[in-house]
Length: 482
Ligand code: AMP
Image 1 (tube, rainbow, N blue to C red):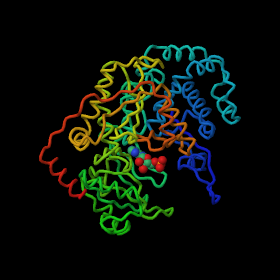
Image 2: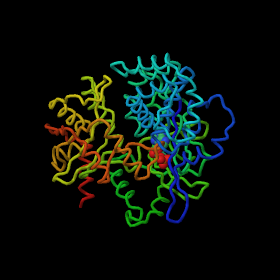
Image 3: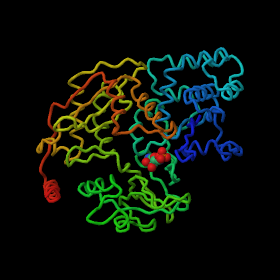
Image 4: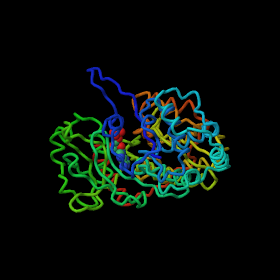
């Protein structure tokens, strides 16, 4: 049961058809006329995948997945977020799905004719026993391990859980009852990059082996030093910016490394020249070399270059934020709560500015009711996030007082679906959607802010010690400032 979706095409002002790569692929004859392959038999009929109404597509794909549950050996979607969206959809619609299975009749809001036809071949007769069985599992107080219960022959969950998707691991583990989480590939709309040659390894150990014939790959060296990262950020945000008096092209030339020259343990930004005409295109991903397969380098995905929070000289990467949130959520997990989604933004409307985190929470039991939130516990969470952020952030908070107390805004159930809907309305694709870990658009912030149910601030100032290394950093900050 591998859930796949397409997105309607748009026309650019110049009249070109634009669509995400997966839509392109699924609509192409490569996919539609594919020869039989026993490793890629889907429970979803092509018509349900090719339906451009994502709600109808999701409903029909889940229905077909449930009806054919005894044949399902893997479940998944491209990204973890899409798969969890499907599980949420199932939580909201299982009663209706069971009714359809019981009666053998498809619900009347599925109006897409191709979907209706295709599903009717699978939902060909009333199946009351199957409906009873599914109902019994879904009505349970907790949905822990629901995937194993509904699809008992499933061997693994195939979803990408590296990079920004890593924050879904604990929620996936909760629903899957500990099934292996398998990230198979690293790819983008611009180019296919690599595959995971050890699919059953732990998510934190995943490395992708670059396929050297997919494009011409080059790498910009990224020095894993905070000050340097800061300069990279300044540079990366503005293409035509000058750095030390040289332009972007010269700067890239001075830092570029070929595929054969990357070194284990070093960090690089990926640059591709593709067959379809992108020339030295900066993908925006930072990778770390972990080893080689024959002569092909293997990389761990570190982060997207531009997803950061910064108020003063602090620079928090997506990875830093994930680590801090992972620490803080241990507090609420011990109280039976799950953090299902989060994002952030740097609120600079007040002086000093501060980090704002939006958290969507749920009880471990299967309920949409928002849990009661203890003020002290939530303040501890704010503090734990701050304590887990890097020393530059803590110095700004404690010594420079250039950053205000971190804030957590708890949002109501379904807020991140609304955020996704908003992003889709702005042109994102369902398949390739990833929750932004940092919000920059005001409209997106409004979507979240209008659903806030409680706000909490850090009451304690995080610790910071002027160790020698930190003093050095401070000096170099000062030199830069001068
Ligand atoms: P898109 O342009 O929507 O196709 O997204 C491509 C981007 O998704 C990549 O540049 C990465 O930032 C991210 N991505 C794709 N595959 C992975 C992966 N396996 N792990 C982490 N991030 C990924």
